[in-house]
Amino acid sequence: MPLDTAPYDALLLVSFGGPEKPDDVLPFLENVTRGRGIPRERLVEVGEHYYGFGGRSPINDQNRAFISAVEEDFRSTGVDLPVYWGNRNWDPYLADTLQRMKDDGIKRAACLVTSAYSSYSGCRQYRENLAEAVATVGEGAPELDRLRHYFNHPGFVEPMVDATLSALAGLGDAARRDAHVLFVTHSIPESMNDTAGPEGGAYVAQHRAVVDEVGERVRQETGHRYATELVFCSRSGPPHVPWLEPDINDRIEELARQGVGGVVVVPIGFVSDHMEVIYDLDTEAQATAEKAGVEFARAATAGVDPRFVAMVRDLLLERAAVERGEEVRRESVGALAPSWDRCPVGCCPNQRGDKPALCGQA
Ligand SMILES: CC1=C(CCC(=O)O)c2cc3nc(cc4[nH]c(cc5[nH]c(cc1n2)c(C)c5CCC(=O)O)c(CCC(=O)O)c4C)C(CCC(=O)O)=C3C
Ligand SMILES: [Fe+2]
Image (cartoon, rainbow, N blue to C red):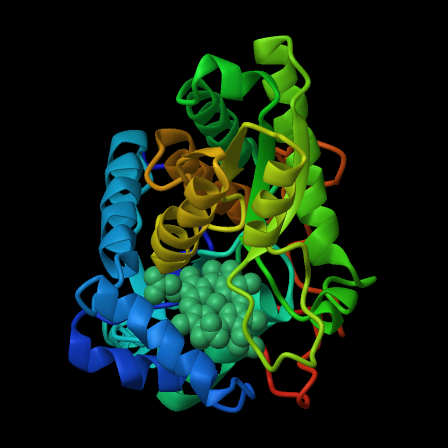
């Protein structure tokens, strides 16, 4: 018997997109930064990160692998739904995917965004992209609901705990003893965090909840309370605009000066090993650590961990039941409550002016 997924007849994976070949790099970067006030020098620099990896981001292949894993999970558990995929910044673009869904007769889809937290960049901007894509397709475009934020879902948190434990095990005994666990996420402008979520500050608050929960579980598993902290990578934007700090590289250098022998870097801000992870962490931050004489181990991202894959099904069935008016039990761990189904009005505002966005409260 297939499980009841009504009112949904599809799942849509909504992601960032990335270049597939060197010629894609500049047009991709132009898509990402259009109207975002990013200095030219920064674009040239980030372009080099991509060229250094053959002009190809791993993110699209990672999304393909994730979709295959979700399809397999659906098949084996009796969820009879097709899975579609659309990006903000690169092919397959959201509007093209929505057109295909409409042609396939899809009426209403649940959207999983590959970003776990609240912020303009991680949430509302995707909701604006969905609104734009629906407007492009016009009459007959599928109705879309966004599945809730999953930073505190056990399917996201538990793989992070195991990844942190494995990374700790990868340090030498001496370095491990006083190692600092650096939970890292994408920096955003301070003003973007100040307005994130319904009451502001949600981006940092949600990350701190994950840091505390993973830190506590690692303590339970190892019997040792490692120093844990939240640090940031991938700062962009003009120098006079304040972004969230400390930067991971600055922090590693400071820890080295204090005599700390090892760091474990846990990319809680990202769901797969895309360019921010393989360049900003594995290349740049690792080089910083080497130069400073600090042992470095990077924890895996959630990727295709079966628990993370199964989370998609859990969120989908949960939301479907909510939309049918049924009582549901919402899985979550840590200090914060499960997140909302529809973003409150004014949540994570676009600081450059209002744009239509889907998946919010009326
Ligand atoms: C919060 C956040 C996430 C996590 C949530 C989520 O996953 O959505 C994220 C993810 C990603 N960011 C990515 C790539 C880029 N982000 C940029 C620029 C920016 N990101 C920002 C924030 C975030 N970004 C911000 C505030 C900017 C400044 C411009 C602006 O205000 O909009 C730029 C332009 C160059 C630069 O400025 O660095 C690039 C190339 C890729 C793809 C990687 C790949 O190709 O493998 C991914 C997954
Ligand atoms: Fe980004």
